[in-house]
Length: 163
Length: 440
Image (cartoon, rainbow over the protein chains, first blue to last red):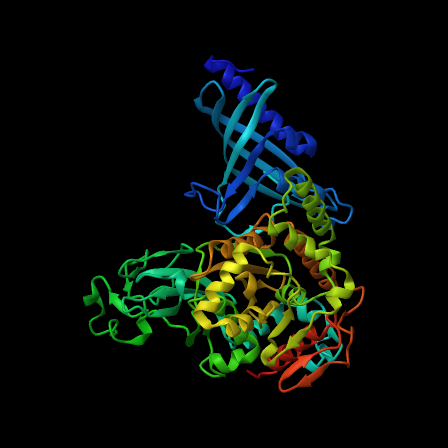
């Protein structure tokens, strides 16, 4: 568990973000849900200026239940847009610890994602802001904010799950 | 695509089947732009997108880039997005406020929000050459016609043809009446967010899917099942019913018999309607509050009349799909034979409870956002259909035989014997044929 030492937190958060990427790339859905606190949320705003996801249109704004539903659809035998499955590769970098106290950490980072699907590659890039809660066995995500650079652009096809 | 060029229009579009070239051929696509998109009325946006003088949104009519603007005089205008000097786009951003003028970034020609010339730098250079301040040739060109119905703005690039109200007719007009009447003030206001999704398929495939009552329980089987499962999980864990968004998705797996009982209606100019199937009047406090507000504004009888109007999709052919009870719409922008963009908006009912907006927002999120679990599977089907149709071999026809010959036309309205009838597709293609043969 990360303590008050800045370097320890930096390294612990980086490891956490790398592992989250691996979980997503590996479609390890049970592990994915375990990353979040019970009231945790994954949020991709429709506009960078947004200060909240509540009551506004968003690209993603999902609690545990909505994420669980998305997973059940993806794994459903008749989810035909998952045939073939999309493959993803995440790279996370530029990790900056913004705030830390005894219970929580706010960390900003950058990501690049390549997705392969239907003989086609797509690229996504943007920034993460993780509000992490310290737990006995590591971190839990209270809020993951994801701002993609093309949030307001036309989407070639849609996003079947999280970036 | 290679196909027999000697096929007549009557051979391409038959009463129960259509040649695949109508979807996949590039020349036919260009003819569609000329004969349909540049002749009919095309949805440009809602007046509330441009509330203040200087406000603008850019959009498309076929391959033409257009601007919806609000002038100093409060009037809404539709202009071609093109500087009359050297042709540069005057608005590069999707939307914004231009202040007093559209200013060309190339040579600083300036135009009022109605397109008229405001200023041209060093204009003495035109002495004896052209009257750049007065001659209409040097003003931004307005759409040949534009008009609004209940705040919804349409433009036509043809000087001739029916006026907007005649063209909308009772079928399409009802979409805008229905959405506005649900507000106790009789008006809607756009939520200033436009999701844009590109479909790798012909525009008609999208419109046909909107009216296809057979596809939901098949295409959206996975999402419907997942939502129904989560409704149970949610109830078990919280003791409460899951939010309405889950039911919206679970409804996709209604049995075939239910879908077959839904009515479809076809109108002149290809407009079509699919009846509603969602239970949007639960006895919850939000709905009751909404009903009370409407009853106060219009009386109980009229409130009942307004809310018992239950349609799921109204297609304003060829450019728009409206869902009045869910307060949203998708505008169809054909970019190429195999590429279509939808611009997706949702609305607030002025004066209605916030909970009614939240319902609309839930549908906007689940069905229409870039993370939609619903259109994820639709778009896959559209791509897949187009990919099949663009191939030279493997057959030439798209079949619309379901319940063919059983359509009933009375008083300008065509209905069918079943919800799953391919009557709406046949109706749209009847209009397509008329447009493509030079009619308007």
